[in-house]
Length: 351
Image (cartoon, rainbow, N blue to C red; front, side, top):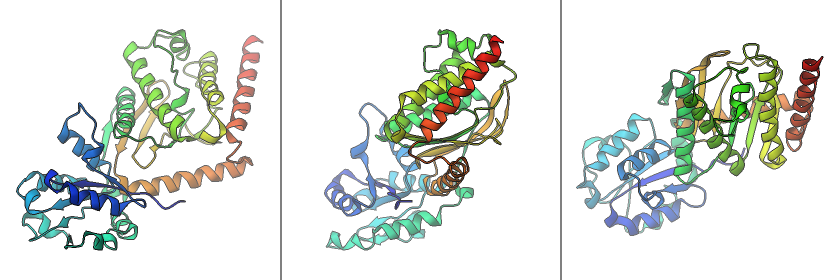
């Protein structure tokens, strides 16, 4: 796995902008500095600060005489600490009191370039690894499938709003990419539920999930672990065919370079880990056919994300190896298999 390009969010007073620009250049290119230059117009300033901190691997407040007078810096440090995001203060002059005294800081001398050794990738890597345990992550829970779809789209959209896209890793049934991307009045929505009506709101929320995750896929690719042999007894054979067709349409529309697929024939329909880059992860505790996923746990805790990615990729590669598929052609192999399953199901329906 390539060396992670950790995100470092810099908080500062605008009067110290020249200093911060030098600090940002020191962090590049091995690290990704994020600061208010990356904020979106028309969105709340403080709300964006909270989102950037929540998605950062390390929080880097620049504490000077100017910034220390603005007590928000202490609130931001407290927010980062509450989320178990490592805090590495840069201080100029006398180290202020309050909670900053409890954190080892880096002193800014007359030569800012001297910070290169203290802000190296290895220093940041050690900080991230110190907070990499999943037990240190903070979580949000979506109780029902509609809440899950809402939060999935919201978390994925937040990453886009921060100016990024990331690879989708997903394990579970047919993945979110079997959800229709057509308008909610289209007949496919009724067909996928065995001819039974579902609420327009539920369809809209699921469609938002599909479209937002798909945007990440098309920009940065995806790795999908699926089980196309799940029978969907609750909804019947025609519904199963429609679901497989929706996934097939996605696979047909994306290139091998942007999509890898592995089969897990032992997988239960309740398995559902979703990882979008190292920006967020979600996993459901339980699921019931016909009722959807329940108690889905979401986290943005970047320091613990790498272990989740490593575990997913290890299982994914093992499944590919057992299938004797390779990464360059797995999408095509999955496409042909699903096409064959649809033909068999359609033939049986006629007979």
